[in-house]
Image (tube, rainbow, N blue to C red; front, top):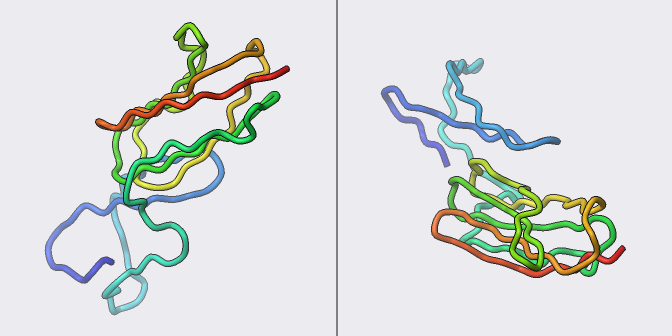
Length: 136
């Protein structure tokens, strides 16, 4: 909720759509109405999660792609990487700042060999690893 306040303040907005999330620095804001808003309330399912979660991919086993979901309770630098059974990094899926929220992405493994892979999410002090199986 955003209440009317006096003085100068930085305001950051999150725009969702197709493609990746981006951070926009708003240089100026003009209200068309002569009365500024007194509050903004979020509705729907866009609420901020209360904890970090790395979900099990689906489908699993998969061929050639799978969906990986995760939730962030606070914003920060996030890494999501895929490793082979020997611990070698085979893909970097996320390596950037993310806002708090619920995310999912599709991992396409068509260039990899069949086998067991691990995907790991690092966000602040949160680290979680899960196993997935790719069958050609």
